[in-house]
Length: 281
Image 1 (tube, one colour):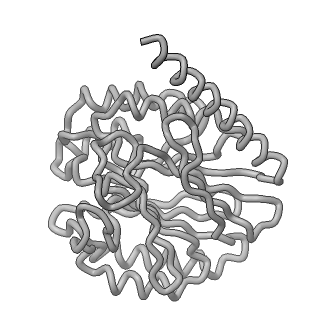
Image 2: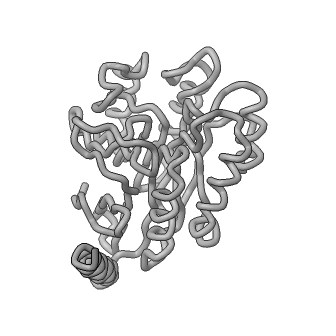
């Protein structure tokens, strides 16, 4: 048993040292601010707790965190919400936490009441915007009752208005979108595209400030590029992983900005604070 424990501890210490190294490198390379994205913690609270702690130790601390849904396994379950809030405390103590509604979070009146209460969503709708520095965040709702797995009706009109307005606003340099279901899933849900995925994709192509579109739903990491548009699935925050599609590791995604305003780096960071993916967009 001792022979097994010693290598594990050594590996853990090496990982923590590596973590410190990449954090220090971020500062030395001129990183000015960052945000983090994760999705689908569901009832994997042990994993999610580790990720939340990792997020809270990032230096400099991220400005905001976004969860792309599936807070819970069973909708309107107050106990699961309380567990999520407890595990999220390292995040909540340091930054705002924005939530996009997932299919497991429910769209019946009871589920919506609890989501508003614990998710601190105060507006009329579950789609909304957020501004941080020169970046504009659009949080979408793929779970509107009767319009599931799509962006339709009033939400689509609202989305077009937000994109058009942000495009002509000179103080906005970057646009990011967040939703639960991906336009083009690449894992277990491959083939279950949003019903209007192609028309949404064409809208996104017309807005050159869009840097990336984030989603969850598939419990994995995936970067899918279609005609230059970057779609990132980051569904590894605690739920049972989907294996066989690549990217089957628990993680959150960190998006970093630098003194050079056109430089953006994206990393996925695992439960031991190890960097798995690392690329610039």
